[in-house]
Amino acid sequence: MRVQIYVEGGGDSGSSKADCREAFRRLFQKLSNLKQNPRVIASGGRMKAFQNFCEAVESGADEVVLLLVDAERPVTASV
Image (cartoon, rainbow, N blue to C red):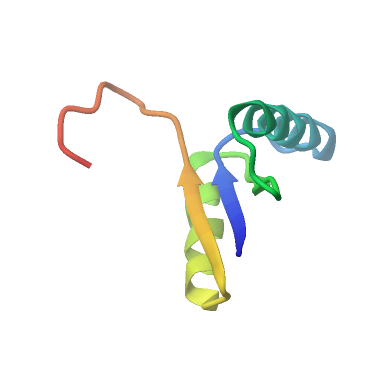
């Protein structure tokens, strides 16, 4: 099963998004022993990441789709 992670970050340029993807690829590679690393999609801003995530979920593909954004303030509620 394929895993896709939509992340906030990478700015608006292709080269900075590529750098963001590479950094996450290295992180996941170090943290796990998965047979296949997740596909990281650097989306730029928070809302664009959320929109991309929603589109992927709605597509109904046989994938695990995750969203990773930073907290703007401390999280006090249960998630």
